[in-house]
Image 1 (cartoon, helix red, strand yellow):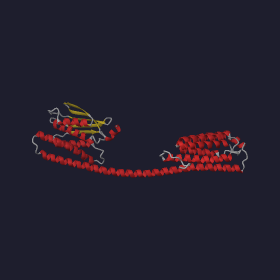
Image 2: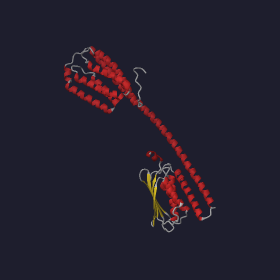
Image 3: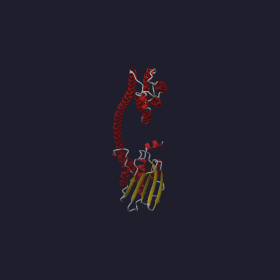
Image 4: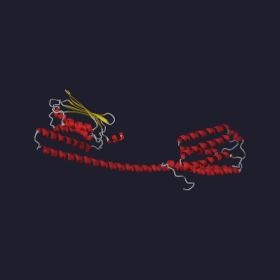
Length: 412
């Protein structure tokens, strides 16, 4: 690495890299030029060397510190505040001296502060410089004009040299600002183009996966229907009404799962599972299966926005057992049978499900396989169940967890 080259830094942002480069190059240029101006003007009575010497030592120390610190922020504060103090000293402390060039340094200090430290500090330095200039014009300007000495051609050359030097600095800062802005905008455009291309590719991949998943659901549903048909054929060989009923219950559970896959591939978006429609379709199939000769009224209210992927199957089996039990045991002496199912979200990923019918249950066994299955599915959903039986019917109240994989990841 060359002695004058900017040292390596850990800045990853392009704006920070540009600001560091600006501060480094400006300090090098300023140190060299200000040394020349100080040497030339040191013996000139119309110039005061103190501000030039202060600026020279400030820039020299800043270079050394910046080389080892390798962070531009601290040195930008030092340069900005130091530039303000030196120009303010020049305006307010020197008398009988022409103040042609200090306004140029004021402008450079303000532009430098805006570019390296941002708007807040830029406006602050601008206001401070404005206050000092107002003090100068109201308190020192007239006396300076009255006491100005005669300037010869050599003094004019000094003015032109310093103006040229200040103009180079101002042009370099503006050049860095425009170049940095242009480069950053170009990088943003390239990044946006790449991001749009990736989004397009991801969207296409998601569509392909969506089609593939729908095809899988469709094939699974067809396979389950084949299994159901084979079981129905085999049911003709079963003797005994009780055995046949249990066999049909097993078939209804398979159909409940097949119906899930059917509803999944029929949806445009796989994650939007229509729970309300599923319950009604399942209930209709079960009514046909058990040949209920009465019209059963179903009231379904599901206000859950999304059902977790791990929740659908156990919840479907839960519905199947509840509706099956009602159709088998509850409505033999009821003229207008009805079933009410209500689901709504509670908190922390849980939801409540209330299931009620208006029948009078007549089973003799206290612990049937269906009830065991209800308890198992409730436990699988990390839930609890309250059962109430009376003259007005049977009511289940479940507290269940929506096993949404994304929700579980956030909680963990």
